[in-house]
Image (cartoon, rainbow over all chains, first blue to last red):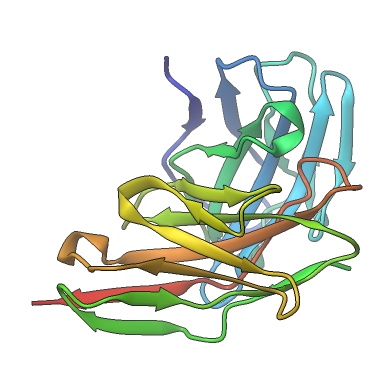
Length: 113
Length: 115
């Protein structure tokens, strides 16, 4: 049982480049989310999904797109990378409306130069 | 809007001593409350949760937390700290009426346990 798998683990982008952060879970969780972690700011919600075909914005959605075509996958797209998007990104999934706790991936460390 | 406050950036404690990591929250109605731990270069790991029932919740690795509704607090505790407990701890809250994925985190407290 792999849990939540995020790829890549590290990435360096140039300003203006686009890329997709991958997230996959094998627990049949309905709920999936993307967070970014910045020093002194905790984790902030970017986008989330309550099931395949359904997504919504979180606290800091600007500059990011998501889609949820399957239950397993929830990719995060950076449309035109900016230095302000330098961060550590975590994907999380949950079953039973989140009351059982969330499972996090190991993160993607993104640097935009 | 819901929010979480972790007033201490860092907590220092000697091994064998009790530890407390503080958390207060603000949410409409009754909350779901969580504690997570993050070790260096790792994702967050679930420690414990409060959903309903007994105000004292026991979790992984000997940690426990006490829910206090009147003080809107959910402090994390452990009777005897270990050096291996050194990590970054996050408190999180979601309200019962919101969607599951809208979990709001505190800014984190770094726990440093020394010999």
